[in-house]
Picture 1 (cartoon, rainbow, N blue to C red):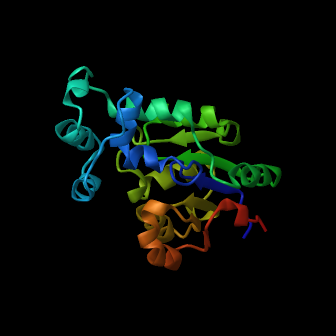
Picture 2 (picture 1 turned 135 degrees about the vertical axis):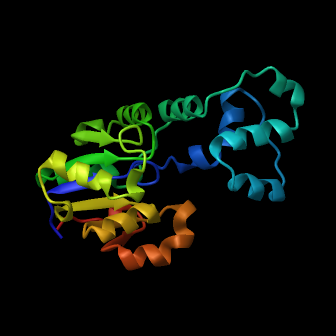
Length: 218
């Protein structure tokens, strides 16, 4: 389907960076020059259900080198994420070619992410993708995020179009549900951490891709 307005998620969609958020414990250790933590399977499962900040506290409690931990000052989670965005904001396969094609077809694009705005700016700039997007929206402007229609209506107002004139490129089910309820065209992409939700995502999406190398604007 052809459309002239597109909304992109960032982490997990444009960029293969969900590991930074999901495995913040290991990222924290690497950033501070510590050995990779040894975490049992049971502890890993427990940590997977914790918030990002609690995961770091979890690491400090269980880290096998307590003397090293004592030397570290408390780190802000977003400092850790920013460090890894600068180190490697990994573009997913086919993304650059897809964005070039959409630009050539006159599609206007933006990024709507659950990531704070200054980190979106860092990630897009470091990856070289910033030039494709007119604007970005984040929780600082819309705290309810993509789980609520408000952000999509705001994007449509910025573009000067109707909400159902837009396409959403996304990996997260909660955002896809919202977009589907608004009649948006949905291009869903597989992401390893949300793959267990793939069946429901496929029922809501107009297209489901393993990678953007499969995508063709037509």
